[in-house]
Image (cartoon, rainbow, N blue to C red):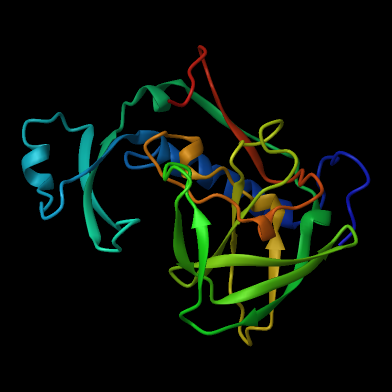
Length: 243
């Protein structure tokens, strides 16, 4: 793939219709009652404590919801239980305007080679709220592509059967979310090729709520050139910020 020569013009590619539908679905998703903007608290419980969302939910107004989650303790690997609190009327939802996004550009749709590896291979990913610690994620294969004359071998971890690429580029912190962006990469029959549509790169959940703990791009997933495609940042009214 070669670097697009200039800022994107209004798209005429038929795929842009699907992309516009994707944008609408993204806006609906992040503003849903349990969407990214609704998360107001993540509470990790003491070891051995079983979560009781019903008890936590008792007496709360209907627009508040409580769900459970689990992760591996970063030091011991033991299961760690937690609760998430969602507010369908959160300040973030009420002040949300839109997600700023680059114009659709078909030049940012590229084919890549996917090379499967052992199903249990773990690659360390640092997480934004783990104070420099890393967690091993299953990366079922390598994605190889050439971007603007530079060869990359990318690590995308498995997310319920779809590859999730966490990547960084020089736009981070300037035009796009500072900690990188995410891109789903569908697996294909035959398993030797994949399509990366950077027009569908999206702001990770932690860009909408500080209550998420998101993975950061490992060194091999950091591009040398600006990826001016996909989502940039959420935009809020009245000076609201994510905190």
